[in-house]
Image (tube, rainbow, N blue to C red; front, side, top):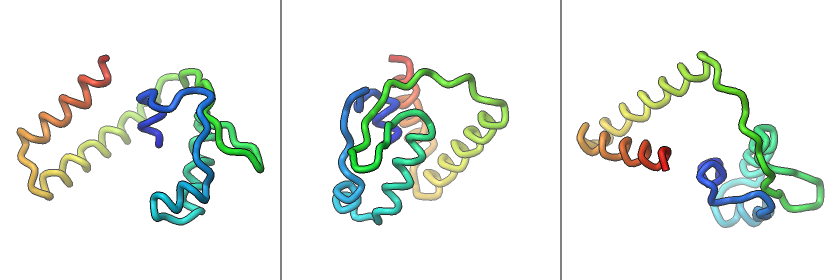
Length: 107
């Protein structure tokens, strides 16, 4: 969901499916969806009001990431690359995928 929000696939004013409906569609527990919605609301992406569907809100850019957060992101990227290699992807294929992601960021 965060990817769709960041990429602009979900725009301010868009209504999200109910917790129950999304959980059923994804085959996951209601609590998992509710927790994800709460986290996205804390990050400033969603407006949550009891008895109403979650709504995407206009999110103002947060302040720059701290060095600690950047280090954590770098660690997670390295872990992801290691997992991709462990699953049999070649370094070339991984590089292609990372370039595609980077190019999308620049558009």
